[in-house]
Structures are given as structure tokens and as C-alpha cells.
View 1: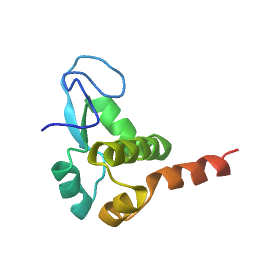
View 2: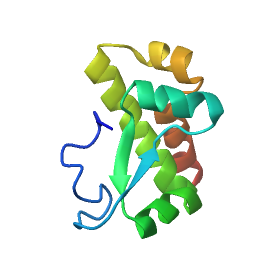
View 3: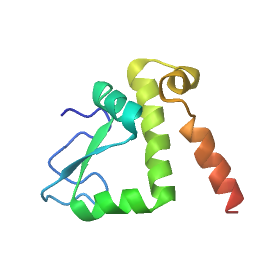
Length: 102
């Protein structure tokens, strides 16, 4: 499965180690997982990093915000287009979350 987020799919996207990896759909859930496949919004991560993403909300949100920016640039789309496709603006959500933590 090709990724527009990750160049070298032989290494873990998060820690950079060469090791057996799992596919992580950046945008999950029933509808968005399929869209992640269609849009190549996947990364390869090893098991420990995969569990980390699923259990650490801020790391997951940061990944989603970064992927949103990449999606917009890659497909020549706007944040509004992204919201129409995925139902949320993760860049805005991350910024709001970080402001709460200040």
C-alpha cells in the first residue's frame, strides 16, 4: 500500500528503525479508513509505535494535522476540501488543544 506521507516504507515512520511494520490508517473509523486507503493516507510503523499512536491522543492528533497538510498540498486542495472529505479540520483541532495546554 503506497503512502503520500511516508517516503521509505521499510522503516517505522515514528522512530525510524528498520523492523517489521504494520500499516496504520491515519484517519480511522469505518468511513475514513476506506478514504485513507483511497488517498494513500497510511504509514508503516512497528508494533510499539502503532500502539503508541492509538493510546496517546496528542501524538495521534499531531499526525493527523500533519497528514491533513500533506493531503492538501499533494492533491492541490484546501482545508475546506479536506473538511468536506474527512469531516474535521485537524490542524485547527491541534491548535485548540495546544492552546488549552499552555
